[in-house]
Image (cartoon, rainbow, N blue to C red):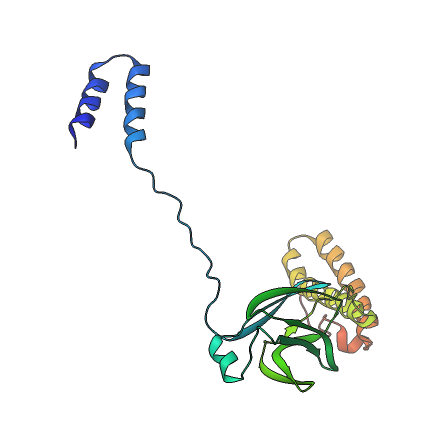
Length: 218
């Protein structure tokens, strides 16, 4: 501990004034060095060949690419006089294309490609023919449609609910042995649910009835 801190502590102990002591301790706290905010700069390039296609929303997609100098040299591409060419494909074929003179760049594609699998290809044109260098991973595009449940889905939801109530009623009615009124009420509810289940599942009463015939449960 340095001499300045020792002096400040001594002053704070000797003085009776609360405000003076608070001021002294606050002065000590201000002397503690604060760690600065760290910044992590994003590199301008990663020196790896890649093309990335990402969805932004229903009508906008983000395309990023980096073509290394080695790849450009290997294929004899001079961006001072040539351009890279990019094409977007779905299952039926090309749906969008663009060209660029930059080996590292990005582009926002505006277009509606609903409910499709699309991907990007990066390459160059040679004698009017597209020569592919690399391709992105495929992505599934957004859809603006709301998928409502079909009629069959609603029927099965209703059947499942009735079946759950039926099972619950057929097992819990045994808990009312101490009260005749509650027991009778639960039996009436059980018969009602049995009829609903028979209508929903389309089966006979003998197959669906949860009550055991011929048994004595009194």
